[in-house]
Length: 259
Image (cartoon, rainbow, N blue to C red; front, top):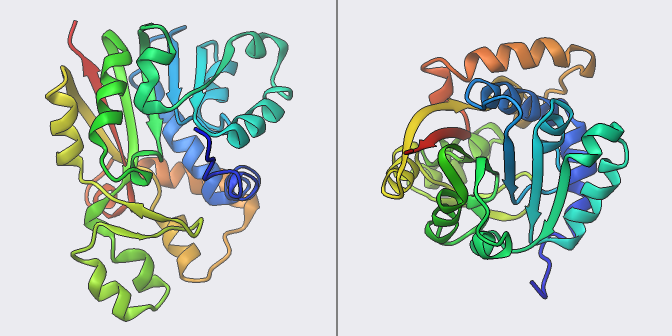
């Protein structure tokens, strides 16, 4: 962990991306999807949890949260945001500076009722070692929650940005430059489902995360921040329905480990 690739991106990621309507939608939709599967007052491990945008609302809701991240810069952002939580929620949050691919070792073999990994797999050339750790860190009967880029919708961003040559090439591509300006890799629901199932975690449900706000953004339309609650409600409904969820540039897969 000597090199921190997110050191130069921490401000843009934590302070800008999540401050947008699209960032709000991401947090809102994933939070409500998680609550459909999480038991009350559970222990939650957020692998690659960054600045805590997904796990801090769970801490406020009564969950005991451990944020594990290899980036000192991102954990620094998380600690800044942690200071704004209620005193009770603060007591329910633990920070661990470690690589997700060695999570079990870093946590002393501890198992959790839920293991989250959102927006991380796409930065790895090979998702298998991290997926193995996610499943390993889940307790029997525990939830594994993975959100990552959808390989079946790679042409959406370049097409909406009117980069037609790039869009044509993207139909059969697995990598591309994302909104943070960093090259990322995509997977399919079927591939990640197969990986977790081979490790004792049964796929339960999968969702989209955002659609309309995403497409509007790439089309150059600024969504009114005052409408973000309405936007989030629409995106939450679209994320659970076909064909809308299939068109999302990211997917959210939820599995449950065998008891």
